[in-house]
Amino acid sequence: MSNFSAERLSIPDVIFIRARKFADSRGHFLETFRKSDFADLGIRCEFVQDNQAFSAQTGTIRGLHFQVPPHTQAKLVRVLRGAVYDVAVDLRRSSKTYGKWCGARLTADGGEQIFVPQGFAHGYCTLEPDTVVAYKVDSYYAPHSEAGLIWNDPEIGIDWSVSASRVLVSEKDSKLPSLTSFKTPFTGVA
Image (tube, rainbow, N blue to C red; front, top):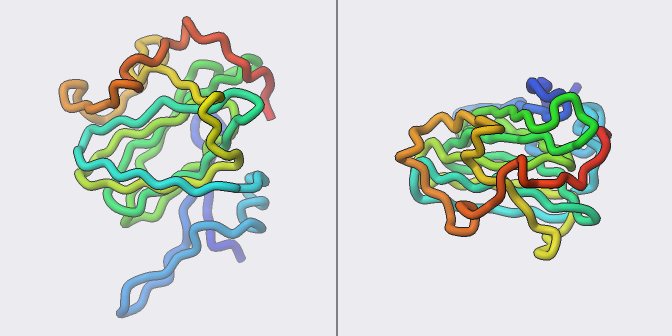
């Protein structure tokens, strides 16, 4: 019996995952990753690096980030403290959902995760102060392959669940290009 349940989001390759919690008087325990159970969900990548980010302010947006070939990354994202609205944007040229986005709320209390495959831009917006996000990737960070799209691109039209006046982004993220000025190197659908 699997300790995970999963639902495919509006872009079916993006998977929302819930882990089964085992609770008692001390608190709770849950598995966050089991290779065999994730393979049953269609997630067969080899994760090679774990990352963690702290955001002090509600409304902090990190993204939309990705790595271009040959260092593309799939991500498995979860929240250790607080809550985020997590977003994936399809950048695969031959996909029916190219340029479309989907998202889900992830919380530390709920233990939800989202799997973002290669060929997607990824970002999130913090919904609570002092939020900590952790994620696994299946390719090492490669600065020369780092890329991104502007978080508020009207062509993509992401509803980040917070007022634009409350958003905090890095200087680097505020200068990312729009989807229309981006020539995608992601050709196919896996």
